[in-house]
Length: 401
Image (cartoon, rainbow, N blue to C red; front, side, top):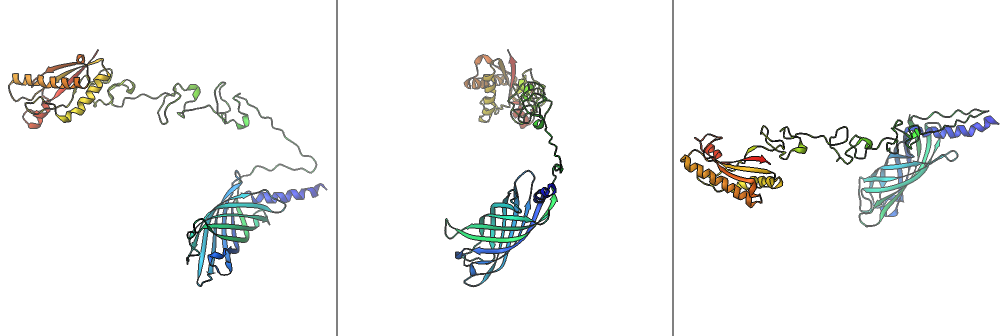
């Protein structure tokens, strides 16, 4: 009697084995029942098919590619055509019922008609189907299915051309998946093993689900038992002193942004009030140049500021109004042409013109001093026109209170 009771278990085992393979290939034959308005002779034709399915032990829904082909399909009005279809479906396999394994599927496909007519054209279709598999062995089964296809009708908006395909074939399964060892069934005694779960690190996540089993006491964890890192900077919340660091920011071991010196002036970015100082320029502890050529040049024998110099003056004025603890000595220069006394007065006028412009832009007069240096300290050769133009300049010397 005990041995007879094992027979149903063995049959069920055969069905289960069919689902333990990664892939299924099913060559099929069948018949397409076409809607009357498609102008198909006898409203139907034979179909050859091939279906390829990939299975996963982690999902009941499997992806499937199917291909259907029909040759010499006759039209009622004369002529014939080939019809080819390809579809991508999701297949849901139900638990075995008796000696059969039911399944259902749905998806999207495309129909190619080699000889199109107004009643039957190329186009996408939606499909849905159902069927059963009857296993012969652990890798071979009889497959029966019916598929309904609806293709939008381009000549009659809101309606669809309908086809029903019934098919039969053989399913060959291959590529064994990794399986858990089957429990040992003994005829006389079956021993039950009870596993007692726990939470060794007391983080509220059971050992069987805890991916970080040695979390320190009191540390907030996620559903996997691992310490939280809310801003994803690689430093857990318990150690993160800067918990809202923007994504992609480089941080130190405390989770705070790593400081740098982008303009290489030996003043860290966080303290640098002049972050774009030219390389090699002497700076103070704020990272600002002690002395800078403002590149404000003048025409020969003129103290009128050129319009192209306004952008430089706007930036300098903004710095002085932002940092009122700085004072600027504006120094004017000339080239070497003309008398020394005349050049001295001209350089003073140039410095005063710049100071007046900065005041007009909102700089406090107490922050500004105008000085003329005449033709002294040339920065270029006065023998050339280009050199003389560079020497007709304004320099600024910053002083911090």
